[in-house]
Length: 119
Image (cartoon, rainbow, N blue to C red):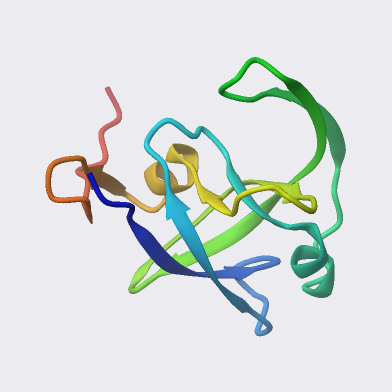
């Protein structure tokens, strides 16, 4: 199976005019989106906390976290973002996909609209 990358627009908030476009790997196993911390700081996104995260190989790392505004085409939403450090992969996680009403089609490796549900 091939890898799927998307360009995602990232802003401090929905009201912000400044934005950055990042090419992110869509990983259906990743919960959180990871963006280089330097890029987030350039957008004046300041971390609210530092958390521990477990990697696929079982290693536990500490990274800073905050919320950011994401845009993909006409879809917009806020989700947590992890401040990536040198050597970290830039990832688009499922929390961000769901916030935008999107899902990864695992067979076609495409991003598709997801019907939002309350129940």
